[in-house]
Length: 354
Image 1: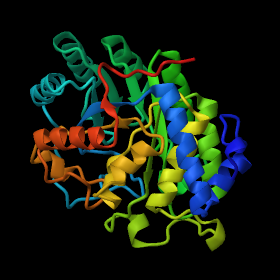
Image 2: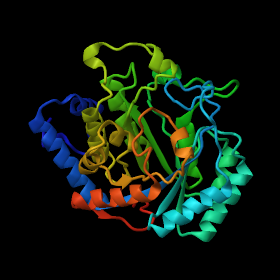
Image 3: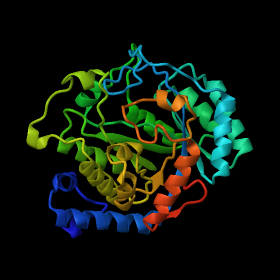
Image 4: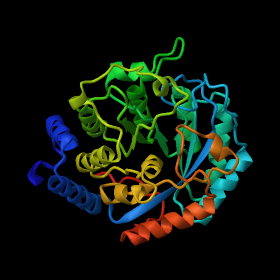
């Protein structure tokens, strides 16, 4: 892997070579290149986006997720509009530019209720509104955009169709096509975000390289990349559900491979907003977020979900910051960002398309 190959036009084969790289010297070149592209395209600002996990209900049977519908041993919750508004006002008070509302695919969240809530947030705060509510109907997505929602996050997890189908079964009578939904979201004027898991059992270096190249094809505004973290109470956590890959081709779900994927994604998608995720902080509590920021990321999403809801939103076990309150999380992240020579961004931090 040479510096000259690290360009926006990298081929899938070159991306794969970057993912397979083990030389510390050459990885150092990758980190420097990604950080340079980040600085030139999205500056030194780290944008803070307050995350509120508004519901842990979900109709899906995803094989990897701790919120899957088939789990009967977790306490389900759905926050009220007033509870969410309280967190929105807190986010604005702390200077965050965005409120991210995330949930399982919960059809108990009615379309008009959410539209009314979005309007209240937009009327009462200066925040951008990001939604991450799963595969909703085109009518619902249009209604929420009309109400003022700015962004929608929908991770496609893997572009390998066979692997995707094995971990994300369709609902009865409803074919899952997240790529088509992402394309539709763009026609509505949403900033669109997607992403993948690194190290899903059965994932190969070739398929992950294709995912990163596909980010470029989709021209995403936001890209989320995090490690697959096993949940023991899911089919994927209990057995070898997915097809196996030859060991030399199998992507590990480790910290280093995540950094490689973040850095390569930054280079091929220079203007995208890329978070240093909670999952990175989970596998490396000491400096996972900082290393993500130093290798291409420019967004952090502090958790505003109040107790006791926060501990019930367990997509995977051992999630970082589970026992911190929102205020301590906010103060800690600010200090960490400043300590690595970056500054805290202001405003919504929307992608500046070139």
